[in-house]
Amino acid sequence: MVFSKSFYTYLTIISLLFNLFHFSYIEAQNDGFTVNLIRKRPNNIITNGVQAPTKAYLGQYLMELYIGTPPIKILAEVDTGSDLVWVQCVPCPGCYEQMNPMFDPLKSSTYNNISCDSPLCQHLYSHGCSPENICNYNYGYADNSVTNGLLAQETITLTSNTGKSVGVPKILFGCGHNDTGNFNDHEMGIIGLGNGPMSLISQLGPLSGGKKFSQCLVPFHTDISISSKMSFGKGSEVLGVDVVTTPLVSTEQDIQYRVTLLGISVEETFLPFDTNIAKGNIMIDSGTPPTYLPQALYDRVATEVRNRVSLKPISDDPSIGDQLCYRTQNNLNGPTLTFHFEGANVTLTPVQIFIPPKDGVFCLALAKNSGNDPSIYGNFAQSNYLIGFDLEKQVVSFKPTDCTKH
Ligand SMILES: *[C@@H]1O[C@H](CO)[C@@H](O)[C@H](O)[C@H]1NC(C)=O
Ligand SMILES: *[C@@H]1O[C@H](CO)[C@@H](O)[C@H](O)[C@H]1NC(C)=O
Ligand SMILES: *[C@@H]1O[C@H](CO)[C@@H](O)[C@H](O)[C@H]1NC(C)=O
Image (cartoon, rainbow, N blue to C red; front, side, top):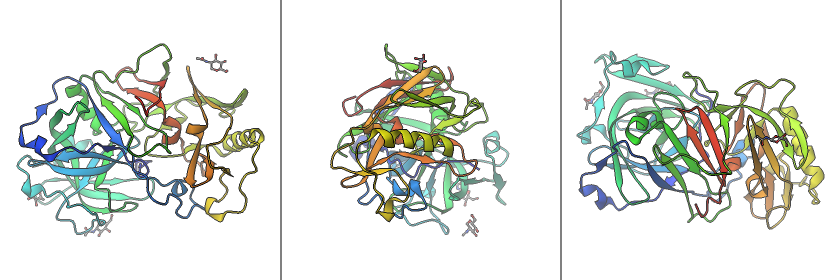
């Protein structure tokens, strides 16, 4: 069971002209590259917010890549909280509807099934064997979404922001033939960017000069024509005097990127995470929009924020449930929040703290965990920082950056 699925973050790599692919692609050769990412904003991001704060922030973010030979365009959710890359494939008796045509493995000359005997099949938590001894996978997410299909290998092609196509052969992926759950018809699968062996990062690492990547996400209410960026491998390091770094405490078995949060300051007021700070008490997940905190900490942070905002919180709009929201045309003149990660203080300003789920309303982009759910540092809080994940040095680095100009 994988905890998180980022059905909220669409990181859409800028569209390329198809004719780039009439020429043979350049294979990644121990060199890094950067891709542009575009955000898509849904028309209405409040769905039925009352019981489900995440849904109230629903935004959809896709990454574009090409798969197969000839290459087929795929738009898929990016998710640092899971590690399988998968797309819907025909025949698909149990698929959800999607707008674009599905990938057909029989029409690609570079598609390969994986044998059940292959060690690659053993990477999967849950696998089976078809009568033909082909590896079947079954992959589930915390929201009960599930994908089932065949484990396979294909060539994928990404386009760097210099216009160069980067083709990578033999990427292990799931060809989903039975996928159900929380998906919409724009998305054709999920790109797992987590810490596990199957993730795109782990697979690209040896070809791109290292298992590392960085991202610079533009804030939620940025004009959608402005792209975010993601860099892979060599050159993705986050450098400079204002960089702060915290240890990644994920073990080899951990799919998620876990770090240690000591506490949060609202302006000068320090609020400890807990009476006992466990190592790796929060995961950094590009797939989850709000930041999820233990209930007691959330309540203390919200109270401190409320005390420092001169406006009256909204109390008469059922669509926002119990979230802390204010009516204002422009973002709030609110307090800063500092996340005190082990060795790294990360300060957020209102543009990273409050998001407008609808016109004229700004809400605190934090939510409380239910039960024993893990804490999550979500993508709203990640915006306007260049954040580097170095799986070899086992660190996460943060550098304050205007991602709209980066
Ligand atoms: C798809 O998978 C679900 C379980 O995830 C199963 O109940 C269903 O029978 C499957 N459908 C097909 C067509 O294989
Ligand atoms: C992959 O395996 C499936 C299931 O056994 C089979 O139907 C399909 O033809 C195979 N594809 C290729 C390209 O071998
Ligand atoms: C982070 O902030 C705390 C509280 O303000 C301070 O005591 C600490 O020295 C800072 N740590 C770093 C690494 O800057």
